[in-house]
Structures are given as structure tokens and as C-alpha cells.
Amino acid sequence: MTGVVPWRGRTALAVVALAAIAAGLWWARQARSGPHAAEEAFDIFPTNVPVPAVSVVGRDGKSFSLSDRRGEVLFVNFWATWCPPCREEMPSMLRLGEALTREHPGKFRMIAVSGDEGWPQVDEYFRSNFGGVPGGLTLALDPGAKAAQAYYCAARAACPEVKFPESYIVDKSGQLVAYIVSSRDWSDPVARRFLERLITQ
Image (cartoon, rainbow, N blue to C red; front, side, top):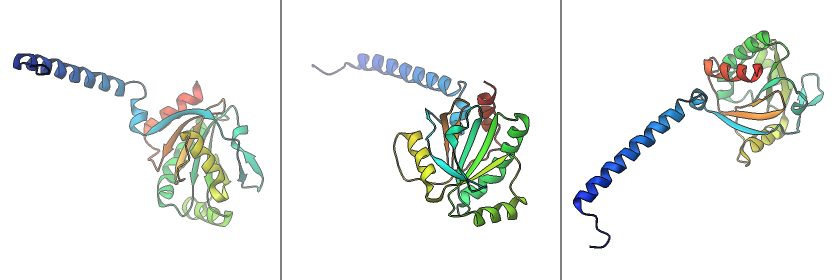
């Protein structure tokens, strides 16, 4: 009879197992309902690495490094005019950027880094859809997606194929603290609360 559990023993083990499962589910719910549960539901992936030391090209034609902008919370969005999900999220993203720039002057900056090969496509996109570049938005160009690749790899500690859109959040100390994969509805209050917590801390 070695290795065989009597019926009564099996019943007792089943009760213990069910209790353990119930306890596990309870703890999982508690963890999910913790302070970052909403961010998890919005798919804000946490990370904590230095900002990659890569340069992008500003609208004035000059290169600048995103790692030089200490003291501000940065929202860095990698996108392209030929990317439908990028265009889909852009209006709500710009509204969020305008609101945070207005309410927290000097403490927040939204940077849209385009993977397009040149400025004509980018300029036409903003002219046609928004009447020009909205205030508070910093535009940059990343032909060849070298900066996008650097951010993609740094956030994941691995280098899968880069896909647009993707957004990265940099805190005031210059640490890359979160990334968001694919398009989002940036009017969701979760996004604003997350960013404002970084801005005010």
C-alpha cells in the first residue's frame, strides 16, 4: 500500500489543497489591487536603467541627447507617420502632453521621436492633422531607428525587433523607469496619475 493515500486521507488532502488555492487567489487579488494595480492593467511595464546615451535630430537640425535632460520627467514616444497605431494614439497623447506641460512648467517634457527618413512627412502630418506642431511638444528625428533600438534593448535587457509605437518614461534623475508597448488611449486617468506622481515626487 506504499504510495497510496486512503480515501479519508485523500479527502483531507483535497480540503487542504482547496484551502491553499483559495488563499493563493486571495493573495493574488490583494497584490493586484495594490498601489500599482491600475498601472499594471494599463500595461505600464516598470524598469530601472540609465537612459541610453544616444542622440536624435531636433527640428532645428541639431543633434541632442535625451540623456542630457535632467530635472524633467520625459515622455519619449517612438513613432512614424506610416504607422497606423501611432497615428491613432497621437491625439490623446498630445492632449496629455499639453495638459502636463501647462500644469507643471519646466518639470515635464513630451518628445515625439519619428522613425521617418525626413522632416517633410512629419511636417505634413502635423499640419494636416493638428494645424501645426502643438505647443509643448518636442519633435525629433531618428532615421534608421537607432535611438529606438537603444531604448528598446535597454528597457528589456534584450534586443527583439523594434516595433512602433512605443513610449518610455524617464524620471528627473535620468533613469528609464517604465515603458509602454503599442498604442494607448492616453486620456485614461491612470497614465496621468502615473506621470504626475513622478513629476511631483
